[in-house]
Length: 271
Image (cartoon, rainbow, N blue to C red; front, side, top):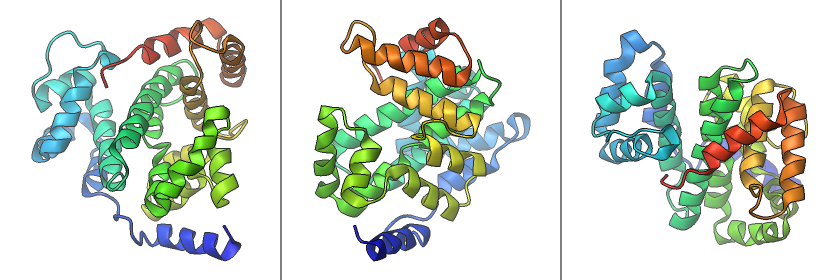
């Protein structure tokens, strides 16, 4: 893509041309910061939107959160998930629902599942490295939002460009080769336009960096890479070994801890 076309794309994203403004549920969720003061408002926000309500209950009942009793209400979801996790689910779901319109359903579901698992693994890894686990969950939910922007902008051409990833080419490299920009950079443009917290914007921008300067970016980038690698016994053993070693070195925790958290999250099949 020529420099002028790239600048035009950036302008369209910044002005949210052909894209929704910051979703109202996102804006509302960001304003709910105190569990004691805002719990009722959060429940009302979930209950007000039937599609959001159904998705929250689906996630709350999944093995991702280890819930054995059925979660059948927003009040129960709040109790099971906790205020911050429920808030961040609403935050992430609102972005995916708005940006995902027009994206083919199979691809959208696959991206959603990866982002949800990345959020959970980021949350768990954050507990090991003195990073705010709620911020890590939110950043994991949103880290691939730029892919939805590119998919909306380029349509079928975007998915054709990603066919190269079947041979192991990283997604961000395939995007840059085809469009001169990757989803991490596009997400940064969008989140700045939406005035999202700087930490979330940086994590999205940095999650494909080899060594992100911010620990939050390292956590989310590590979770993203680990979940795209085959688990031990399911493919390229050398590949996952390299990723586990890289994660342990980058985060300063032992390899066995990384593998335990990864195996627990990756075993989830019902989201």
